[in-house]
Image 1: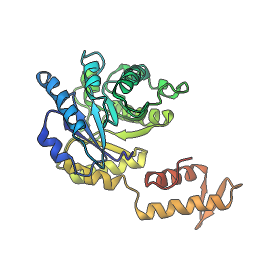
Image 2 (image 1 turned 90 degrees about the vertical axis):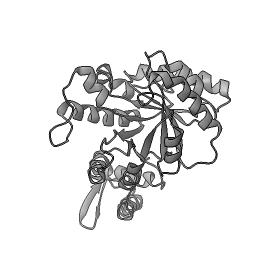
Image 3 (image 1 turned 120 degrees about the vertical axis):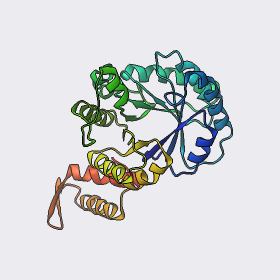
Image 4 (image 1 turned 180 degrees about the horizontal axis):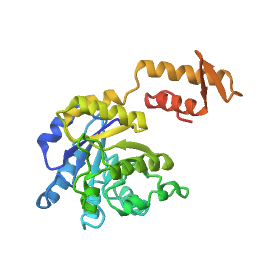
Length: 297
């Protein structure tokens, strides 16, 4: 699966789904949570079922954001959408690894009932939306074998967290995240890598500001994120471009990998007057893997 751009689409809008289909996003996230008012939840579930049953060949991953555990809506959401055609579930307001395990157990049963190959439906966690979540990141690194094999990606969010703690704002006057939300972002990045899953940056709220989005994506990629959430189709092309390695990046990564391959006993090598060690090799392999070349091993 590619994870550069994940576009949210309200599940109760045929029009928005039609526009999103074909916009170039790597994944569409049909949303049953925040973008659907309580009175339309049941209708939105039926719409997702219809989208899944009518799905033909597509070049994007089909994800659904369910309502959080504790809302009383989670099981109904899962029962409606875990069916052939679904690729993954985005779980909001995750408090920790225990929530991932609980959803995973539900999906185990629903896959069998729907005739879906075991383990096909992946889980993606929004890992920073509650205060409790901020205290439980170590659980992702302490996985027992097979414990959360469905977990494929982690992302973060600031709005629910800032509301939960009573923050007046989560942004500095210049638009940068305030310190508590810089911590949340960093914790998500480290926890995802500790768990061996993809780290995705949060959304960029001003969909008209393409220059700002591109700069934010540049920083995200610099820091180690491999993609991000999107809230409007117009953001997708910019996100995809920013998280796609350039030919220059790929050529350099190939040189680093080839140089180490030619000297398998060397821990440090020189290329064009600069020294490279094992962390550089790991980074080069990640770059190539993001373009479908080789692996990160």
